[in-house]
Amino acid sequence: MGIITIDKSDHLFWLGRYTERVYTTLKDYFKSADLMIDSDPDYYKVLCRKIGIADIYGSSDNFKRKYAFDEADPHSIISSLNRAYDNAIVMRDYIGTETMAYIQLAIDDIKNAENSNSTIADLMLVIDHILAFWGCVNDGIDDEQIRNIIKLGKGIERLDLYLSLEKPAHEVQMVYKRMKGFLSKAKLRYDESVIYTMDNMLSSPDFSYDNVKNLLRKLILS
Image (tube, rainbow, N blue to C red):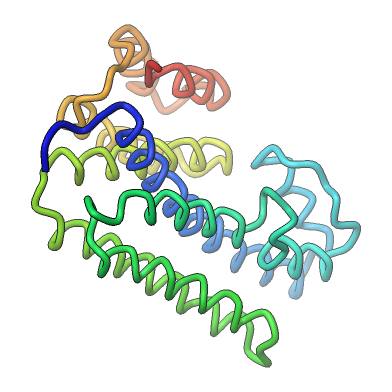
């Protein structure tokens, strides 16, 4: 396939990040929807605070509709999915049309779910097709570096979101370990001092989530 330029690496990296963003935020969307129905109608405000977005929604019903389906909302799940597709289509010759097609199927799923009588059940199809996309990345892309750049983007995004969502410390540590495994394999420039500091911080279960998150955002060098 030849040399992977900085521009192409960037598209692959963000393809990994945006597909992971859809996957993890959609899973927490499901949990939040259950909480808003069962016990706390205003729980969406907690989720907005954790992921660092303004509460532009005003009610749980507006949140459930706009956060999932509003393409004008840059933080919505559909917006992240569209950005994943934008990066995939640029890299179609590198990742293959079958791999890219699973993102298109996920977009079709989320648009169909918007007017469905079983929205949550239909949105599960998005999860299925994101998983199929990752499976296709593993099995359908011959170039190891391409696979590893996508996986590095996925790993960094998952770690960032797990820190923001305040997932249990052992889950954060596990995700960090997996992400770190792709750093050298992806052959992107990164700050080794950041990894050294994060290793020390994450060796304890009492680490500061905010401090690790701030470090993570300095890891990949432009």
